[in-house]
Image 1: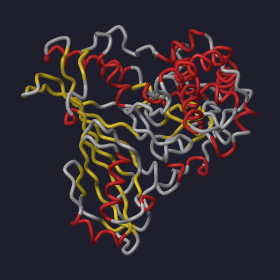
Image 2 (image 1 turned 180 degrees about the vertical axis):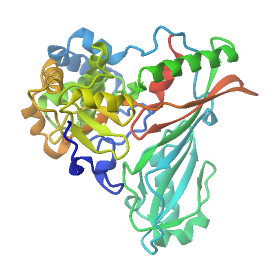
Image 3 (image 1 turned 90 degrees about the vertical axis):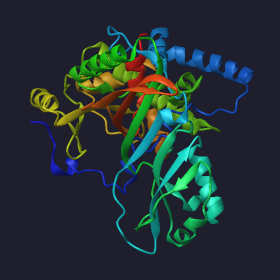
Image 4 (image 1 turned 45 degrees about the vertical axis):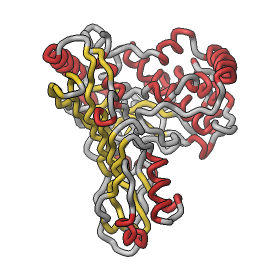
Length: 409
C-alpha cells in the first residue's frame, strides 16, 4: 500500500508560507500580462538569444507546444467572443483561507473592492490616505486591473480608526475585523470568477450549449488541466526563463525569469503526461495529494491509488522544480519522467540545488476537479453574451478555462 503516514498527510497551516501555490513564484495576477521595461528592439534581441539557448535543450516542437498548448476539447466547437468589454464583465472575488480570528489590538482584516485599478496601486493609495507605510499593508494575492475585484487586506489595528477618512472613486474599503496576524501572500483558498463573454460567433443559446458540452467533456477527462496561462510568460519570458534556469543565475529580473522557466517546465511535464495518456493513470513514484487534507505522499501501489484517484480522494501533482522540491524516487517511472523533462531542457538537479532559497520548488496539482461552471445568457445594453461563474484554487488561471470554451471558433 502507498506510504501515506500521518506526518506525510498533515495539512499545510493557513499561516504557513507553504500555503502559497508556489512560494518561489513572485505573485502575479493570474490574468495580467507580465510587466517588462525592455524596449521593443532590446526585447527582440534578447528573445532571439534566449530562444537559441533554449533550443539547445528543447526541440522546436516542445517550444511550440509551450507557446500554444493543445486544447483538451479541440474536437468541440468554441464560442469565440471577447472578454473585458468593460471592467464589470470580469469580476473576481477572493475566497479567503481563513476567517478573522477576532484577536484585538494587532491587525484588522477587511475587503478592498476596486474597479480598473491594479492591486499594488490600490494598496499604495490606501497606505497613503491612512498615513501608514506600504509595508504594513498585507494582502494574499494580486488581482487584475481591468476588472471589478474584491480581495482581503490587513492593516495595523491603529489604522482602523481612520478608515472613514478614505475616499476614492474606484476603491472602497469594507468593515474591519480584528485579527492577530498580518495577511501574507498565498493566504487564500482561491478565487470566484464571474466573466461575461460577448461578441460570440454563434447565438447565445447555441453558445450556452457549446459551453455546457465543453465543461462536460472536461469533467469526463478528470478536470481542467492546471496549466500556467500565457500571461505567466509575457512576450519572451518563456525562453528567457528556461535559459535562466539552465544557467542558474540571478540577475536583475531573474527572480521572475526563474519562476517563468519553472512554470514552463511544469507545463511541459503536464503536456507530456497528457500526450502519453497518463493524466488519469497513477505511476509508481508519483507524488499524490490528498483531497481532504492537502497532504502529500509518494505512490508505492499504483493500483490502489488509481482507485482512490477515480474516487476523488487523491490528485496527481507535477513538479515545480527547485532546490527543496519533493521528488519521486529516482528509480521509479514517475522519477524517470521528471528526469527526462529536465534533460530535454538541459537542466540538472545539481544546478537547481545551487539556487537554494532563490527557487525552493513545490508540487502543483495537474488537474482542477471537480469543475463546476454556472452559465446564463446575458442581454443588456452592452450586447448579448454568456455569463460564466466558477471557482478556481489559488494560482490557477481563469483564462485556461476560457481558452477551452472559446476555442476553436
